[in-house]
Image 1 (cartoon, rainbow, N blue to C red):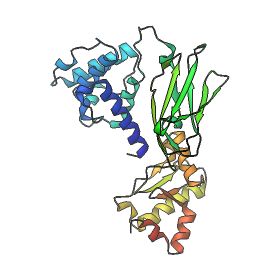
Image 2 (cartoon, rainbow, N blue to C red; image 1 turned 135 degrees about the vertical axis):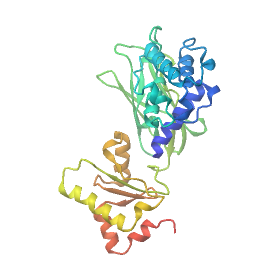
Image 3 (cartoon, helix red, strand yellow; image 1 turned 60 degrees about the vertical axis):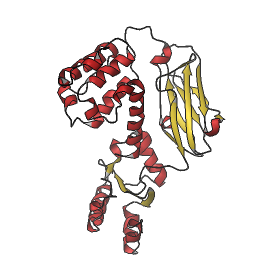
Image 4 (tube, helix red, strand yellow; image 1 turned 120 degrees about the vertical axis):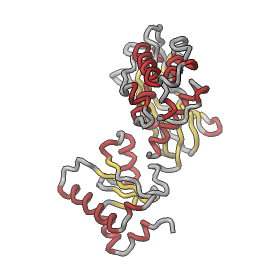
Length: 312
């Protein structure tokens, strides 16, 4: 699992534990199999919806999962992406489970009178991770016609306050950003009419430089949809060269990562750190080494082995 996905997983686990601490959820697999945690999560968001979750029969996992899934759809409009049988399986797909549970993070009981802040959302790389000296952007979306004041506060290391930039767009969304100058932990407070929107307060780690989570690893990014013959050939030739050196057998080698499946912000981080959009792109120990032409030149100069054996 990449560093980005691991951060999202840890953040979601922390939120779940804050809602149902008695279940001490540590993963998105076996801890959900008997269905009680899901029923408890429903009850935590809508009090009384499943107050007997502790008493549910652990031997009736499929039934409990079905109950929790039904509660989520009836109370919050959360559409199931897993069947009760799949959720009850010890080998349940972790990413599917994360995607499903993440919907509860923004769940709002449908029959309640809803404050506009709860119907708002914020998204963007600036709410996930930042880099010192680089503008960290994000977007805030509020309900149409809402005239309540939007406020953004950025709190940096040592409780220092950072002035944000907020620009209202014609479509009613707000482009927001801040420019952190010091690495460290930041808090982004987003409120509408004095009330926090879902996800706020956002916790952001600002790094000294862009990190792709590749420290101590060899990572290759490529495209599965290259439209040029050279692009397709470079992927094949690079794979052949690395396999000749048995790099694919090393424990520090990550499986090739297609940029096509990355979120836009993550994909742009790959290109920004490399300083090029030429694929395939090779990183060693989270440092850009080159595209295929560069790697081939290193090989012809006798330098490639030293670059790959970075731990010596």
